[in-house]
Length: 314
Image (cartoon, rainbow, N blue to C red; front, side):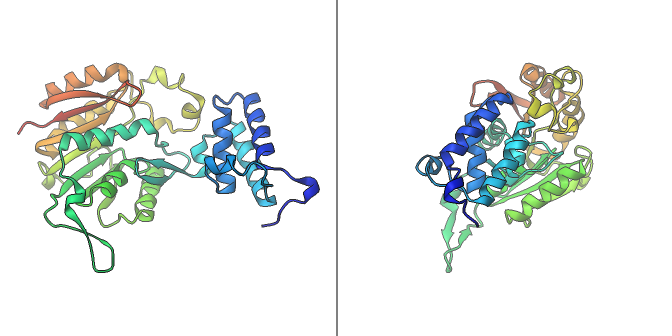
């Protein structure tokens, strides 16, 4: 990389200050956080490293990259799309236009599903192989999972990466989502345990596998139609409407897949669904009416209702 000449230096501090001011004028809700994110992506430095390298001059390539990132952010493009990736639980997944961007609040969906399943501790069933690789004991119970409306595949990949005896079928109807999910599965080396299928809800599952799944997990479109247009611009203008709009009360798709979810779960199997906070009680009642029991509502890390957990009776 070519370094900027001494008489035309643009240090990390100067670039950060300018970026913060520019994003403030563009109405960014968190201009400093956005500026730090963009600078980290442009330089390859962590946010902490930025602050201990304030006087380091940017290279010409870094300046060009930062200019492009800042211009895109100034137009409202989400930071995750600018960087092309986002952390989700213990992995990092690729993101792309026209596919729902994974967000931190969805991580609780995986946490609550694992908690409800009461799985054994993985560390007790993993040992080091001859070449230092991890070897999973065959005594670790298999976990058969469906990830419905998989989107980027972040949930399926998290489950498979955290529980090495998990086998996941990831379903979606959108071609862009299927392509991205498949790419994330490949990049994370999980192709032997995650199958990505085009499906209208649970329609592509083999009917012969009814009653065999331990977990059906889903982050479906659940935003009530009237609420969609009032969502933050980063969501309403950049996430696909197909992945957001859940109908009048946000439960259209939930009602459609509920009976099939019950039939594909084994007795005692778990359903875990992220839904609109104002209609989770209605969803819980619907799940009980459909034949589920032990239905409960879980909160996210901000204390807001986020996830419905229910079991198929044993």
